[in-house]
Length: 367
Image (cartoon, rainbow, N blue to C red; front, side, top):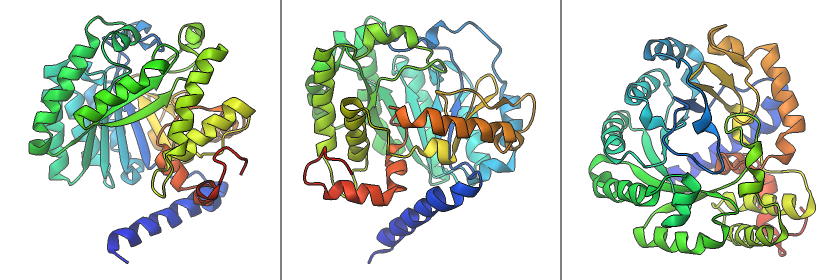
């Protein structure tokens, strides 16, 4: 057995033990982390109201540096840099550098962007890639791409958004080998684009890009988009049938290592049978985030557990208030959650349910 395979098996064993044993008795230290560096955004997406946020003082670089000196960050393995549009924050590269300095166990960084600010994005990627390569950290940039041409423009609320995002992607492709990073695209499945997914996949395949899908969700936190259900939600039978067709295809693409198939199987059963979600979320188990205002979260789609102006990250993360909020989220919200955040890790750490799923003859029969 190769060392890589043995390492993978050990990670699965450790992850399952942490989720199903250790995590039952105490709060696990954070492994998966998100920093929402800004809520400013240069798009007006149909499924999101972040761009409507009023102006508010953001944490300074010096404040972020102080926050990241907390030893709690030594266990973080994966970091996501989000917005708003992260590129609008002029010191985003410095924030990444500080994160790398203080997150001693960091092995991967993801930078999420709408791809509209091509030159700034290229410049940021070059700098971040160089820092990551020095520390042997895997670096991936994800560009939002919800359709081809006018479909993407309509969803993102910006004329020419597809042309600008695709230009960014093509320019990144030209330098990815030289600078040593990965490129992916992410798509929010919604009522506007659901019958155009085949066209998007053909474009992606032609360009040789990986694609991740996110099922539209509606929340009274973070995206604050409860008022958008009628615009982009799957509220009618016709659009729901189109969605289920896509979900079935994603769920049927099962293999020993395609953990996301189990998540889509989960979504199918939740939509068609009203079942509770079974695929675990790594963010609620051993993840956390803080945003540009200093608010701390287990899950960005749920309520904050505190603010960094009132204590250190450790004090807030391990507080009784935070544990109570986490327990409430897991009991009341997680069973109905459609979010696909880091599903590969969550499913991997629920390996026995996943193996049962792989053995199903009928892909939609109950486990």
